[in-house]
Image (cartoon, rainbow over all chains, first blue to last red; front, side, top):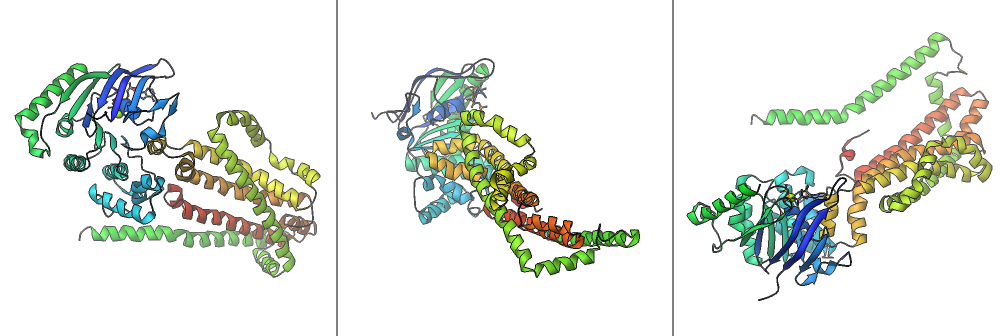
Length: 261
Length: 271
Ligand SMILES: Nc1ncnc2c1ncn2[C@@H]1O[C@H](COP(=O)(O)OP(=O)(O)OP(=O)(O)O)[C@@H](O)[C@H]1O
Ligand SMILES: [Mg+2]
């Protein structure tokens, strides 16, 4: 048994606000295994984004310990950059830089890591094709639709092939057809690269289709309510969604979700 | 096929809109000149008070052939650009620092507000007293006037950087320098250029006002000299000359904007 990719040890988060502090996440233990596909599911405001941003080192926990591949993420209030070196993040908003072309946006992580220009461009082209926005490499972000921008953001996170991929509702802006195609694509990428993926979603079907494990969070304060293992073999085909076994898991999650919302 | 016609029509409309100023501006200008000329002719006003446009025009053409006029022009350009350069360097650096360092902003803010509120043109005699009648006092007046819009716009630009964009850089483990070079600078650039646009105009004003009050060089000095000699048509010529200079500087910054921030909405407005 190798060490987990991500561990949370009694991690708690309070947000200080103008009136009273918000208890966003109660003390939480969690371990995400190497090459696991973990899905975070839960009603709006239950702390999914908070949890993901803490993994990504964007916010510090109020108490508790976070480790990435065995390395502590925070030490003495300082973020440990080394722990984050192999981590890619897709945000709820695409967050593309408006002054960079789509191609330059996709290649930004490579640029920061000093990859030569020609190599960057080639990789960006390849990724644009992968996420289905080829032909738009030279455009400005504002010239793309919301869904296309989101796909460019996914390509950006994939560009330097990080071992850990964090995704916050990456497909929220996509239509049902594209979303299904992107789900299949993500599964394909995961099967090919065996990254550790933590994905936040609102869609129960998406969670069951993609996840090895689903962590259901309940709100006020956010905490883990239930963990569901998803037993289906890979690669999973879209038709899986109409099987009884699939529907059973979906139903179980939906009932629990209705109770805690 | 049915969509081709409206699309083509719209395209023609857009090109027409782009060309529109090239038609309207000369017409408007011609009308104004015509009104001016008619007024002078019909009211019988003395040409010493208001010369006819034709006289001003020939005075300007004569001025363009006069090497002494070009010397004065150069003095004004020199004072403007030197002052503007100082204002840009100090304004941008200080603006970035103020936006990033809380205590610095809090310390300097009262002074910045105070110096904003003081009518700076009223300080020009003081600068002449301190820095003499030479070019130095003009450079300083130009710099002081141009400095504040550059400072405040830079600070605002750095402060209004999108938090989501910052998150991207943090998640990519960017160094401080990378954050500055790849995020803060390009993000603030449209604001900085707006500051430069206001700053360059104020720098010319500063240089010319400085020349009004002291020394024997520059277009401001030339204008006062023509006024004192009652050569009103030549004074108007100097005025036109100054305005041309202003336009030239302003449009240079506009070109800079289209070159540096083509992605920004401001680059698509043409003024
Ligand atoms: N910066 C902040 N300051 C104060 N409170 C915050 C902040 N960010 C989040 N919260 C609060 O923390 C709780 C959890 O927020 P979070 O964004 O993690 O929810 P979420 O599960 O991602 O919701 P959604 O599904 O709508 O995106 C919410 O009650 C929210 O109001
Ligand atoms: Mg969220």
